[in-house]
Image 1: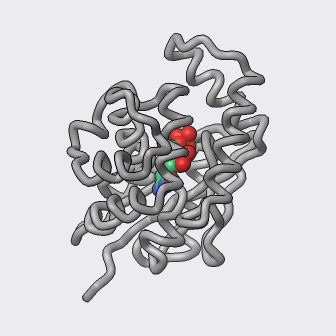
Image 2: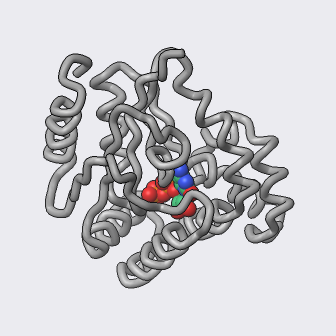
Image 3: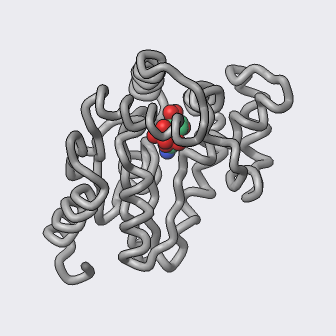
Length: 213
Ligand code: CDP
């Protein structure tokens, strides 16, 4: 069976994965899945139900009953959901419940998918893997501006501490931790604007799969 054409983008919080993934998807005419939204949707449902995000059984139940409307909600990018998503994402039963949907998403058409374990666990044979990162201070600054732009009052130091804690949590969990796949191309977006990140990624993708690009 022919493998779907998947561009796997992994990396830590606020590294610029989402912006890059959307632009690559538009460029290649591929669907895009921001897999972080799935974990965020599970977290949101638990918070709404007044449940503890570290309640593994409850989190698994929410993950198994997730519907598209849940990850299309507009209220998934708030600091309380950031924290809770990282907690539910450490639960192996949640990761298992969301695995098949992610693997089936590209179907025959292919996809651009961004997250933490796309190139390591979900599509270890993806033809293109990018690991997108940036210096912690640059990532904190970006998230701070993004939250401010949406009218959410936060302090830069608090954003920096939260991102650091979430990265630590994401990188040290036993199942599906954040790590660079050995065959992933590293892109450090510190000091680059979205156009520069896009053209750097395109160059690296072309070098890897010349005929398809
Ligand atoms: O946008 P940001 O980089 O801040 O986060 P996100 O990609 O929306 O992911 C939110 C949380 O979901 C992360 O902190 C991870 O704990 C979790 N996640 C994951 O475990 N695996 C994925 N494939 C995607 C996200």
